[in-house]
Length: 354
Image (tube, rainbow, N blue to C red):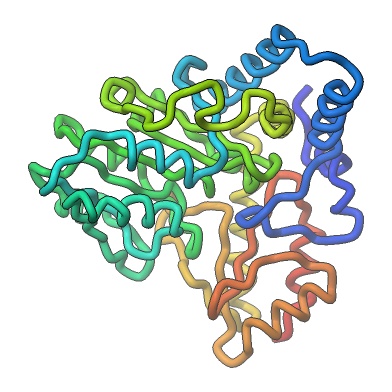
């Protein structure tokens, strides 16, 4: 039987005290994730390291990630985080002076700085300025030319919650020799990512947000076109993460919970809760940073502000009420997950002054 939201909630001790609605930042750990890490560390403490045993575990985790993305496990690599995943591309392609990369303005630094660093090689970074937070994939593609090597974009924008139409973008780029690189950290674990239906060349994410895993581990999907062009700068048994990282097992345990729940059910629950916030916050005098114009633009991120109230003061008030969300500059950002309840949203809404 699928793991229900209520059953999953029981695995999160933090939910007994807090309305935890901050999965776009750092997610809490479920008891099975913690226990998986502790059992592994205990084994390392008391028993000789068993390489064959570890390799079986690692293969199982790679298989779970592959299932999450609907790809083959041979295309999955482990990374430390999103930044290190994107860095594999930034340092691993054979760049030439005059090449360019197309990206989006106001992306999270992890999807900006690795590309900016290529300026020393004569590579230009072209940034698309979103209209009121929205990304028009056709307008974005018009920034590309004969020297564009990579188009780098987030599946979901971390500040506004805008969800990129990756299928439309891959269609626009079809037939062009441009590698599509996706930062999926604000989508993976909350929204379905079927890479059979939406071909991308490279996709990566850290485990600590919507994937509900520990800090310091993540994964990358390396597509066929990228695989034939990518040359890792450092090569060895510990090139990306240590082979015996307990974080890999923790990530696997977290992904296993999501797979048990069922990815369609997870996405439906996340969007339902986020939609409720998008519907009710304006009735209480709050402005949405982004109001989706179509269902395809929605994600689990709801950013909002009040025209007269100081965001930092609101954030403190919510924290004192046991409601955990993010303060982001001049707005607040809520991000509910599958195990959250309507009571969590009630607690948030009741703590906000009108």
